[in-house]
Length: 349
Image 1 (spheres, rainbow, N blue to C red):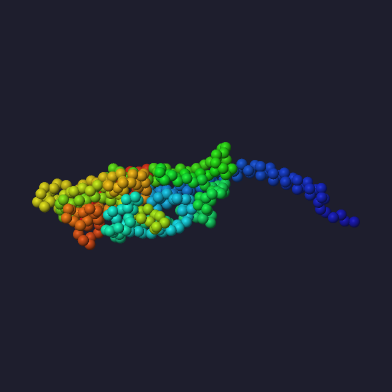
Image 2: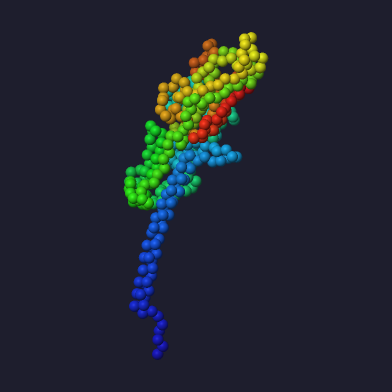
């Protein structure tokens, strides 16, 4: 009689026991490694969030402002804004809007009398929400920490991160609650880990910034009231607005033909310096930090003519032109947090 080969029940039970013990040992060794992976992934995700907000790429050896702040002129109200545009204006080449009398509370254009769209090629700025600032790293529009934490209160807007926006300090704090999913906890894995974006990380003070204006138009200017404005785009659910910051107005003669005379009187100056005030425009009442500083990004300088005593726009001003139909004098500038605003010469031609 031929005996059938195979395992007995006892042998099978022994094999199962050995495999179970090996798996338990493997999982025990793997547990700390997986926790470290999640810990490191959280750190990488915090770095990705900072880049999404404040990316500063290098182009041709120059560091340029980028990311959500540069496109939209503000910090996001929630993390969901990094992937969902909502009613915000979409990224596009936009013509800045000059409002001679901006809204007193917001410094933004409000469509009042004299509002002008500067749609010449020299003034167009690429602004607006680009869609996905996390470059495809979010899963179905959600970007959690490495532990996969969820929130019982604002999960749809902040994806399990503890997010705090301080409007007074103009700062943003993002915190992962660690392996235990609650505030506090012991290091290394249960403790919180966060990202702090302070005002100095995305805003630049504008008070005292000086811009030079030089008359190279070939035409003299006598007793002309001039100032310089900076137009800054801020995106919102109304489709965005242009904020206006300005220098004080100066009554000037500027020699444009180099003969040292203006209207027969001596005038040896071809240019003048204009300094920005600590506010949206010289008489602006708003002293909040967001109105004493500008967000990093690309903005537009405009030479403003408030005319002479008999001119109809003398109270408010409008972009200066050598003559009707000419292009205004504008200049794009890049503002990068942590760096001085650039030295600029606006040339009248």
